Image (cartoon, rainbow, N blue to C red; front, side, top):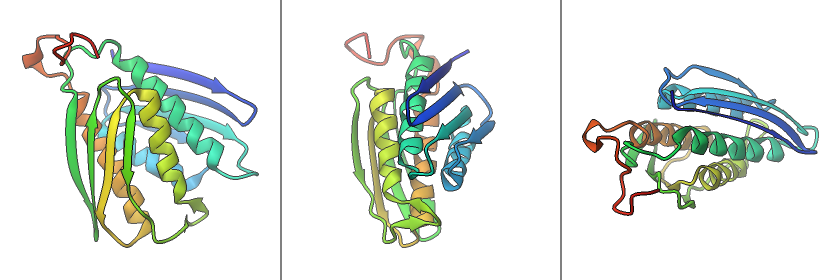
Length: 195
């Protein structure tokens, strides 16, 4: 079973994360940040990765530490679950529509972390959630998972739809990229022999 479990404790957050890559999309999410819970719940459902995230954070200050540190822990758990990456498809891309919004997400499970994030929000908040935290999450997740990740919203107006299209796009791209390819025969999908 491809799974990863990470516990991360700082002066700002106390986080426990578990991922099961070959799951059914079961989610147990409690971050103290309502909109973020919603995003992680739909991430689990659309990636089919069983996702458990428990966060106790300093939300009396703001949501930044809870969101960023959850991204760090989730990235570390994904990296752990992937192990040597033998047999995975490695690359995937998705165009994800959400009503008036269209976002493109492309991923390379390369071991070389990099984020290109070309998404702009017309509103600074979705409810009480700072829209700039969407990028903070993606940055923390990509760097700690070892992903090359490109996220670009081609068009859209509604901030909720834009954020949701980014998270669903990530989920759907990872669902494809992490899938075991029977034609690989258990090889690492790289001419280098390692990722």
